Length: 105
Image 1 (cartoon, rainbow, N blue to C red):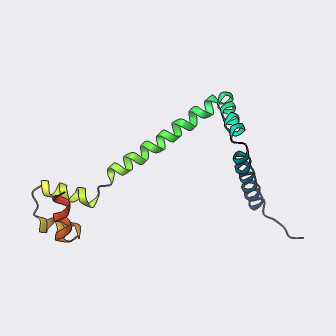
Image 2 (cartoon, helix red, strand yellow):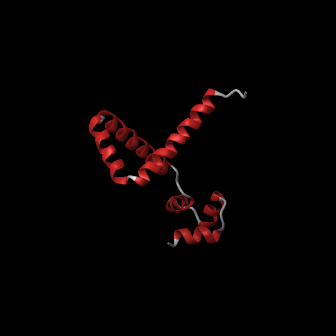
Image 3 (cartoon, one colour):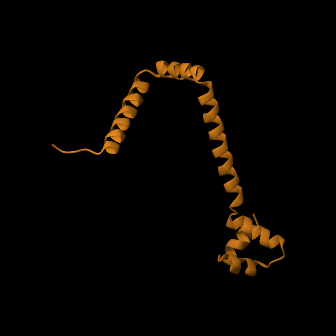
């Protein structure tokens, strides 16, 4: 008889349960929605915690996106600082045509 790893078994079990839940939700969409509504009523703290985590992650992603400056934004910033298009192209490692395109949008 083949031995099995407990972690692999649990992963398999969870995957099977997820598939069963998905198929049940497809067959009974109204019951699934009602079940979710009831669960939310019974577990308001979990819902609140989930929502807080969701918005924290979303805000962290937003901050990260703001930190990363695109090449176009860098070109515009360098131009405002008084650099020529050739200097901008050399610093960013892009063509002069690209710099011209970014600045003339």
